Length: 342
Image 1 (cartoon, rainbow, N blue to C red):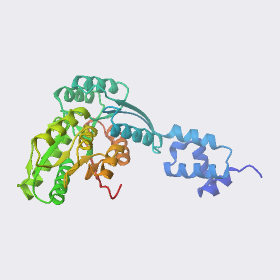
Image 2 (tube, rainbow, N blue to C red):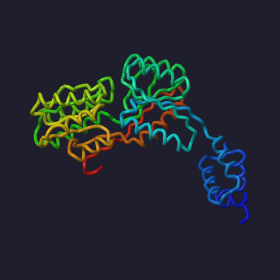
Image 3 (cartoon, one colour):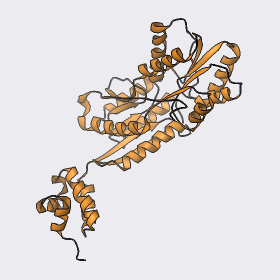
């Protein structure tokens, strides 16, 4: 068989010969969708200049250095989110992305602020998961003064500088959890609430939405004061054990923050209470197992793959928009899981 020629490639791609020549010699002058079509045709017919086309397309793509700060790598949700972000950056077609992904083991405000400033030295746009704290707000302002935009991921953040956001409508998350208790419990009862920390504004909004629903629909429910787990499983387990011991009439638990594996361990160690309702956060191996064996009644979770795509897209948009463009907000729909749909 004769070697495919330029006219052969043009016919296979459904474009003109001049377009093929531009893809080969001046790819930046050709629309990305057309370059992709020519590349696909070149691969299909075994065109001899395939390497040239690929190299030219890569050179024509914009290049972004993006940074993301996540919470501890040992936590399954953040490990899964990190994997999704890495995979999405690798297959991003509109640009070449160098992703600097950092897991924060030390969550003290001073350490988070230090890592944020370090990341700003080598990245053009940054997203982070962090508690709200004056030290971190100052670091965001310092980074913004260097024209590096910052986006709050999962939990909203505020500073003097504009801070974008990618996450859920946490008010709705809380009200949806309350709706579950209202409709699943046979009668109004006492509900325990666990959260990681009130300084995580998403969790604060979860609780506010949760309480607002009952004020509106059934104030006979007794909502206990929230207990902070500080994102630690051992603390969450201790809190659940104490709640079950001191409130024998407890009707359910809303696990709104970190440490859910500890709470599930506490529930596994006691006989199951008839009609006891537990609503938790994020779907991973442990929560999936808990849904199946009845320790969890419902799980509300972030759509991880969609969050990864929207996070990268937001980081690029905020970089291109410049420092005077203001904050951008992307609100994702959350997933609802029960034992019947996982």
